[in-house]
Image (tube, rainbow, N blue to C red):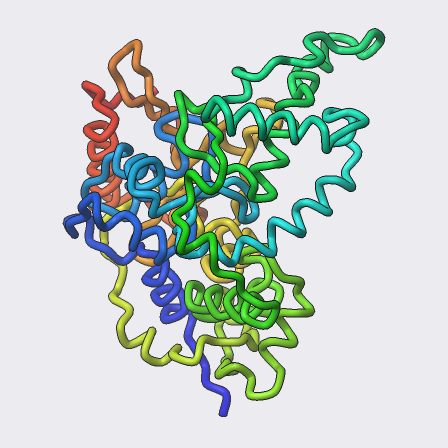
Length: 401
């Protein structure tokens, strides 16, 4: 039998599964950070810090209180989280590490086949990688800047525009390759620079020793994705971790025994109906899903609920793109804009900036969605979130520019 999930219930479930149904007064302690990351699967890392970096922003959006040092503690001291690749650089629960082993093999073949990497590591990649591994084994953790630049200047004729790419000297290219293929791990960061060490010194042995077979690898990727999104098409399931192909996810959903997967009809924001695969416990998930709170939250552009832009548009009616690489004159909104979530609706966008020189959290722009109006209660909720962020980043005032 095919059941139907209304758009309201679908949004409520999706937000709850992603930890966005908390009231804001819910306590979060340092020891709870790992379970929160496990709940949403991963937190994407991003270097841009107009207010706070994405990995910290994502967690603060879901908590009444949160300190960046808590995440660092679990990555660098407790070793309960590790840093590697999903669709981008991310922080991941370390108990998932065994399921990254097959990804390391795939990454090796993929990277070695890319011309940009071969151009940077040179003609003898095995020797460069061996030299870097020997250096770390003998002398301990390193950053890319600690290793000798084999080619300090761009080759003649490449011009000054090549300098940023040429900064990827062979030793740095080897570091990234060894990290992406699991031989090195990130043991911490200084500033925002990765510090690399041998994986056996970073990842606890019980997680390094387990080797999932091909069937278990596929089952884990598909089942864990469905646990976190509730309902999805086979491409969405494959894209969640970006570790299996869509055809593999489809075969897993439709194969013998169907792995307990249900078929369900889901209503989009415009009333259109799509047939999707659903977690076997979809009914129980919905029963346990709390309604989202009334408060407004500013989401990171890299928040997990926004990662799949097509899903966000279909489910919430919210068309979002990041405009940091769009020339200023061509931007529809701003450089680094935060979607605003109110209850189960994405009501608009706000651009805020940490102006440390003026001791001010600056509001550079605010745009509401076409059918959303600025009532007094809504403005009060937006102001409350601005105040929450002001206190979090330790600034003296909120200033509307």
